[in-house]
Image (cartoon, rainbow over all chains, first blue to last red; front, side):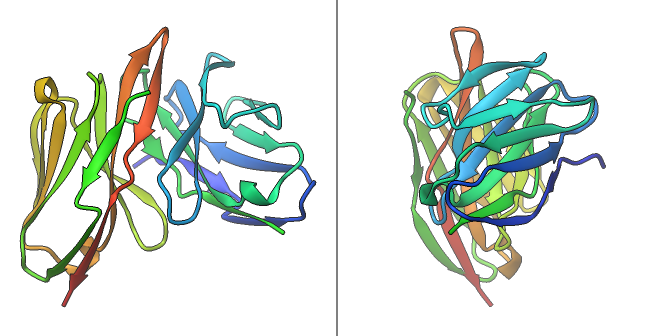
Length: 113
Length: 111
């Protein structure tokens, strides 16, 4: 069964460094998403992406964040200058269409020291 | 934005017991999903259920969209059911869907 994959599973970085989190969505899906979950809290929507454009973003998704689909398979989230409060689990998800079920990857745990 | 309230926040069961988890939402929604977050942090799809009733083994779900709630039923619970159960809704907002998660129900099933 096709699944969303994410790399790395765990990333440790120093405050102020740039990180890139990678995702490979399910191959025939057209809509891609990033979420984050701070430890012990709920899952929060960051951004949705379709047709090489951001279709929606939350207040959390400020100028330090960017997303890209650099090729036909990868979908990346870049955090330009990490802060301590960026420490969280980051989930990628994809769906076939805008009103379809979303499938989540296993997550990348980001730790900012 | 839309508010999603899940209850109860915490639930402790003995193996074999049944339970009902509730998700209330403050506005009309277009989509609703239930997820199980296992102890390793993975989000497992349980149901995509914007309306109606679905069943999958010991789990079933019902969404009454007109009354703005959804229920997740777990029957004959097992220790592997432990984890956090999230409800997530989406509503159409000016050209895009905005997903919102509830805070979850933390379930512990004791042997």
